[in-house]
Length: 540
Image (cartoon, rainbow, N blue to C red; front, side, top):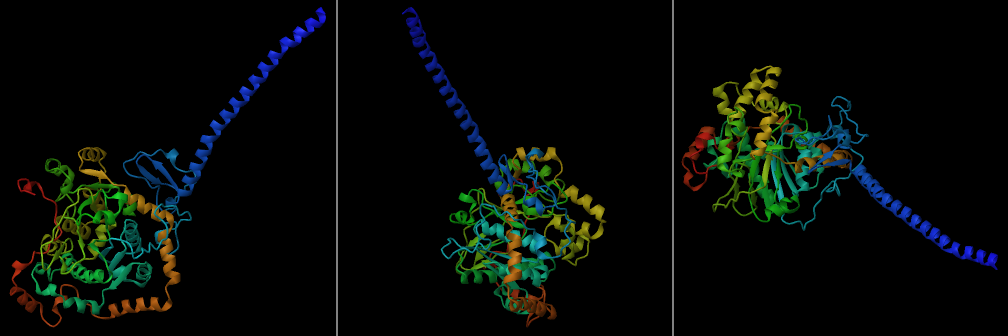
């Protein structure tokens, strides 16, 4: 019995041990599974994020965004957002860089590059063919001789922010068949060639019989361009009305609208409330900029965006021994509501023949002027003007002091001397000065245009536009473009200095102007520099 009892006791005492061991095993199993799940979950999320990032070709860095994969395939160097210290370990290991001399093809598509991974968030259909229900409808008019590498990114950036129609008055390179056929293939873009017929039509404009633009007549270079732009703007108003546009803006192809303060970075949202812009001027930080819209992020704020004490207190440091605070103009560009009796008031403003318009300046939004962002801009501007490089003659050709100085240096100096001058007057290489003016609010970083433009490059839109133009335009249409350009070249096309002289001499045109009362109209507003130290006591 004792043995049986002992066995029984042993048996009964062993049961709790078995139960405890089993419970402990279950607990270990549960814990191991939980740890496995907790480990697997972040790994899965990390892998998912990596896939999304890889497909997008981008690396998020702070408040900015670095396009470091697909963009590098067309870029001359690693794209960076200036002002940000980016760890090279953040760059994808698959990034490749193509030098500017590596491409041997002469095709248009190589000008703008191509990517196989469209991932830009705005990218739906490269045509951006907006429907008729888009409100308000906004159009931009421009007079340009620029090629595809500048104008195509300019067009599609503005399409992204809500512009639906473009009226491009083209000449020079922009009017060549290889370039103009691409423009014509883009929905919403109307190309107007500078033919004899156009100039004969503009010669009948009422502008020639009025005094608000008369001080610019019969002068070369910038003055001639200013008159030509005004005449083109007048025609664009009629085109905008026929197209059912609500707003019209005149821009150059080195200017981007920056709709800061608007919901969704939308120009349409911005213009729902206010009708005018001031501008900021780009500040380049290198002398080898190739694609300004996707490489430049530093801008100098306009006088209207600064407190007076900050502006004048830092004026000389901000001007950096240049003639003025801005290199070029500082009086901005304006958007106007398409309405009866609307007219241009020079290339920077709009007016109305029947009433004085109400102009409202933006608190945040601006026109970003990418002026002299490329070293080659010195010679390209020089080549467009036949003036003598003397102080007396450049005053006859250019309105702004910096343009005059740049023309003289580009006409008289060696390339090394030009580069030295360019670095001294245009390139912002002094990091201490940049930091100081950043802290004081004179300089600012604006990344949105860079991000949008890089995203458009990455998506392959630009190459798609060119490829589409080459395949979808009919042979008859291409021949029609060539015919228009050949007609233009074969005829004696008058310049805008003489365009008012059809049927009358310049002297008689001036006599007509003398009999007109100029008190009825506000004089055309030319490009103007921001106020200088001498204007400190003037109410602005």
